[in-house]
Image (cartoon, rainbow, N blue to C red; front, side):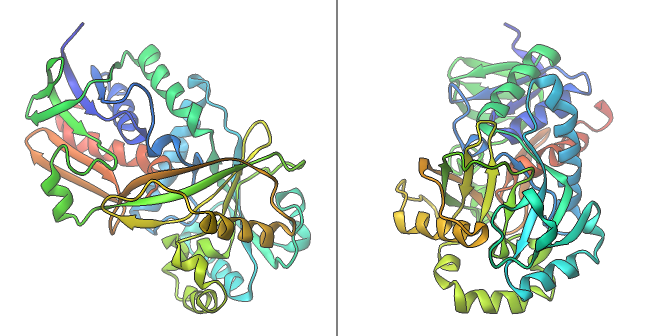
Length: 373
């Protein structure tokens, strides 16, 4: 087995795979090293929703736009089905409609439009108490549980990327990874540890005030109808910075604090995505701690399902699965550092790895490889 590479990537989540792709597209010899036997972290415990609309204005939004383009480029060759396209961002309150109308006046509204409740059609079955929705054409959704393994398999088969799984990295220095199976030599190294904040370069995470966020999610039985696009609602307008940073979001926040204080306390907002079998992936919540507990709370799930019922005007279908996930969390979109020459530490800290990793990785690889690109 070849042990010398142009680039070594530590971590086989979506951020690591994105860096492997960016380098492989430049003809580089790439190895990806991961301590787990298979994808097991945040990259497979999410919606698979590549969310462009509502991402923070400027660089993050541009990264999301580029990432959606890359997903479209690789999905077919990698055998990854794009299950839904676009977004239906519902407004239940006049204050939410005002936020969306203000959003439509920005440059971020490309591909977006406002539709009244009577014009939503199959985008929103039920529609009780809904004023309308912002709809988009630029977002997309994959099934993360299968998309991540298929992306890795395609990188190996089509781009010659080497994967070393079940291999822990004990140390990093310029040009070398120290692992349990011996040293791996690489001209450049990218460390993508996800929410492992203690094994490699822990001082960087301390300085960056990075903690961890736990979320709760559910899979519901097929409801008997199809959603062409994922659905979100008012609570998301104060979490996604592309909306939340608009002045019009302040009145909405005040009303939500009065009417849905428990939802806000637990960081609940609504995303409903649909899988190929018709089942619904629904979430989520947000709780922050250096070491989050592993337990899912029924009262938090009840808040998520309450918002589902309010938006769709019907009781939620039966719950088939429940799970928790964790991701690295800090102010800003990501932590990107150069702890030593030809080494980069890269962690997405906003829970948007699926949505922004491809765009971020292209920037990091261009900077890291420089003239070698």
